[in-house]
Length: 229
Image (cartoon, rainbow, N blue to C red; front, side, top):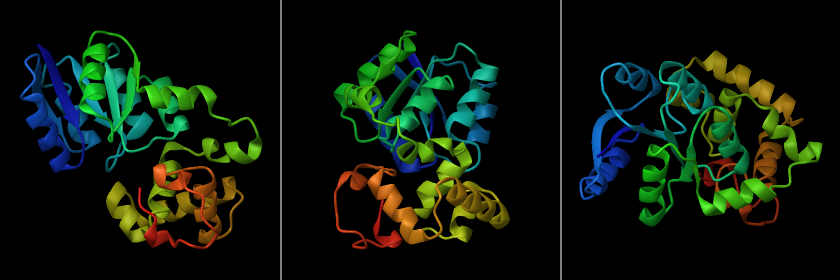
C-alpha cells in the first residue's frame, strides 16, 4: 500500500484526487495540507510514503518548501503536481529535491504510474515536460532573464500577469503589501522592464504562465486581466 499525503491549497483538487485514489487498490491518502505550514506540521504526525505537492500555495511554497520538507525527511519521495509547464520551473523543483514533476492537466495514465514510480524511489518527469527540459533554448541572456528571479519573485510575476493587484497578491501569498511591492520592483529591474505592458509582452514571448503564452498574437491584444494561468 502506498500511503500518500497531498498538499494543495484548493480543497476541490484534494477532494477530486481523494475520490480517484479511493478507487485504486494500492493507494491510501493518509493526510492533507492546504499550505506549507500545515504540511510541515503534518510531517511529524503521520507516517507516509510519498508527498504529492502543489507548487504554488499561500505562504511557503515551491522550491523553498521542498527544501524545508527534505530537511525534515531527506529520503522522502516528492512528486510535484503543478499548473506550470515551463521547463525552468520543473528544473528548479528537481534541483531542490523533488523526485518527479507532472502538470495538473495530465491524464490518469500519467499520474498513477508517476506516483508508483516516485514512491518506489525512482524519478518521473512527464514525457512532454522531459522533452521541453531537454530542448529548451535558454542560452541567450534575453531569454534567461526570468531564470534569475527568486522563487518569491517568480510567484509575484505569475500573479501579476494574470491581472492581480498588489493587495490581492499580498492576500494570496500571505505576505505584506510592502513586501509584494518590493518584489515587483526587483523583478521588473531584473527583467529590464518598466511597465506592465512590457511585462505582459515578456511573459507571452517566453511562455511564462502556461500554455496560453505559446500562442502568437499581435502585441496589445490582451490586457493583464484577460490572461489566465
